[in-house]
Each structure stands twice: as structure tokens, then as C-alpha cells.
Amino acid sequence: DKPHKCGECGKSFGLSAALVQHQRSHSAGKPFQCGDCGKSFSWSSHLDRHRRIHMGEKPFRCGDCGKSFSQSSHLERHQRVH
Image (tube, rainbow, N blue to C red; front, side, top):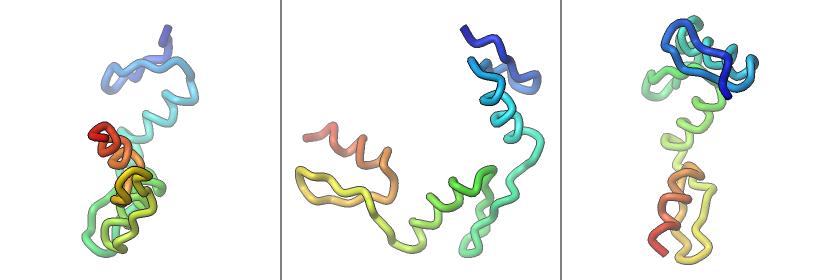
């Protein structure tokens, strides 16, 4: 059950802490801005992940073919082809 509901968008959460974290996306805006392209993010970790695009960092490597990715989710999607 997800008893904690966002009054702004209606999304529900199982934990009140998750709701509080989500509500930040509505109220605090996107204070973390990329110095290279100007794109803004709600979370510093999302900015860090985005910066890999500009830095050319691809720390997630496929063990089957050696192809590398900047985000773990991109590697996971790629691995479905093997």
C-alpha cells in the first residue's frame, strides 16, 4: 500500500520520506546547473551523472562485448541484446 500521496501531482509513496523527497521536485525547482550546457537538475547526483556526457566518462562496461556506457541503466538495456 502507498498511503503517502503528493498533493501536487497525485503520485503515491509507501514511505513518508520518499514523498518528502519527491515533493522537492515541485517546490525547490532545479538548483543544480551544468556549467557546460546550462541544463538544470533537482538533485546533485543527477547533475553528476549528466556531467559524464561532457567528460566522456563511460564507467559501465559490458562484460560480453566490452562496450562502455555513461549510465548503468544504458548498460542494463544493452545487455538484453546478448
